[in-house]
Amino acid sequence: MALVTNSLNILNEEDKEALDLPRISEDEKSSATRKLYIESYGCQMNFADSEIVASILRENDFATTSKIEEAELILLNTCAIRENAEQKVRNRLQHLVPFKNKRKNVKIGILGCMAERLKTKLLEEEKIVDMVVGPDSYRDLPNLISEVEDGHKAVNVFLSREETYADITPIRLNSNGVTAMISIMRGCDNMCSFCVVPYTRGRERSRDAHSIVKEATDLFNQGYKEVTLLGQNVDSYKWKSVDNSIVSFANLLEMVAQVSPDLRVRFSTSHPKDITDDVLYTIKKYDNVCNYIHLPAQSGSSRILELMNRTYDREWYIGRINRIREVLGQECGISQDMIAGFCTETEEDHQETLSLLDYVKYDYGYMFSYSERPNTPAAKKLTDDVPEDVKSRRLAEIIARQREHSLERNQLCVGKTYKVLVEGFSKRSKEQLSGKNDQNKIVVFPKENFKLGDYVNVLITECSSGTLIGKAI
Image (cartoon, rainbow, N blue to C red; front, side, top):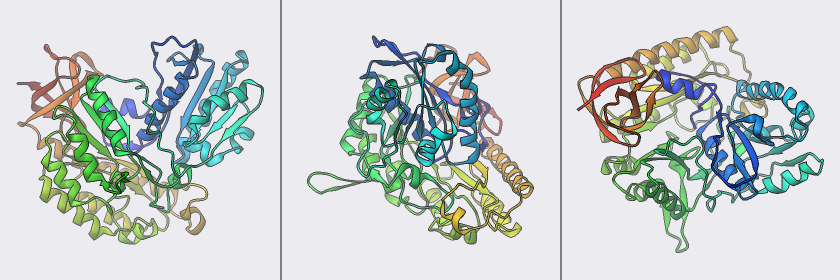
């Protein structure tokens, strides 16, 4: 799953503003008498989980607020995938100390992956924290809140093999009313050596396909025009119905696409070992399934990929890229995740990563320097032996190469017309609208008489490495 905070990425400036900051809850119109403030960090799954939390707590008389001073319950939904992600939360907690001292009745809870990783240790290290709740324990929140209000600390970090929250209708926080996320599965079985996700989100389990289609249908009936199907590895989605028939991810993608031709469908994240030709042909078959795939590589070196336990090598990955281009064409948007300076990485390994970038020419990417996470296989069995200055230099070279390719790919769009879904105003001007095309590229154009949620045909007249600029035709 691509991170949406703490990543060094090649995106347009508008996306960067959203990605570099935690997402906070919004003011909810409700008759509830208690106020809940949520900050979400990390990947899209965390943001989707916060919407589930808001729904559960609405039944317990809580309404969300964007004003922290109004809240009697503050929840931080956390990420543990990198050390910087956890440090950001710890810094935020320090900022909350004076606030908590002034308002003794305010309760603070840590949710998500950091809660699952550190468990009761968080209560010992961060004294102002009242409650620690793992990703599979959100149904227990009302009981945990009651326990805290009775003067006790509360913890539930039980990992489930069944929980998918399929029956809970999320409350769409910070919604533009146009795009929404649908969680289709939870957990991960891939066991990449650098990753904490299997330990913080548990084993992989897929959600009832019919509940997913119903959620997409309900969103479309409410006026939403785009849904993103979310999972740590969507390609391994597999759900067995009562008649023992199997629904694969390609099947599910088709089911959601058939909700309406006016409902755009995206998905994230794909794993190179699992993405099938069936998925590619489903994308090709349905115009409303976006012609874009996020396909993390992590490294261009087969030796490093083996150490990472990615279960594919460079040649396999390139074969998947070639197949995507064959089936979906050269215009299909492809983005990447890349890690610089993994354990034992040599200069030759790094050059292989740069050459992979040159071969694929991704539209954009999310790039990191390696950050060792405690208790992962890499931390236990490998030595984090690449000096920080070398990691930083290699990361800078990867970013620079990606920026070149992003500009090159965007320049190919100039002179072409794309169907753009309007998601809001440009951050720079209320006279400009902003939305995405089929390939997940941000497009900015004069607003004229168009409005949020409109599909607009836009002729691209110029570009930067992160944004397409055009005019409606």
